[in-house]
Length: 138
Image 1 (cartoon, one colour):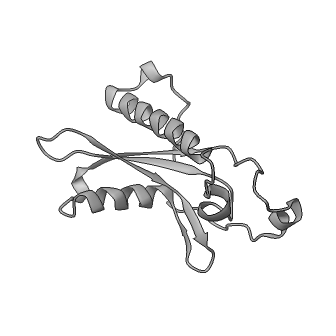
Image 2 (image 1 turned 135 degrees about the horizontal axis):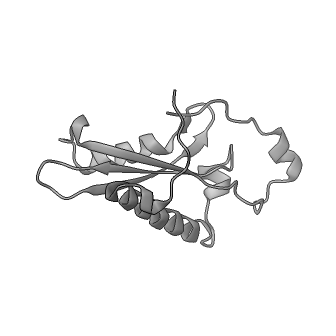
């Protein structure tokens, strides 16, 4: 395993800069929609970890423009587990084009957002007693 230091945006190639830009747009859209009245983000979609994870998958078919697909983790039921953001984005790409091939997948970007603020009707005790997720989807 290797690790590299963080790089400034101007230090990476143009394709990486584009996926960073798309992730910024996805984050901004997500935050706006998450704060919408009657959002169920905490009470249903992320009710186990209260931890949004966003993903962008980059697809490029031969002789076609790049496409970006968004995903977010979902934790709707402990019995069925959760769906990680990357798998959600890959599924969105497949649904948009079932003829998609593995070699068309060029990049994946993942962003861990801050925990959601405690704005639901759950009490602090309910939150502390809720089962915590164990594991990370890769």
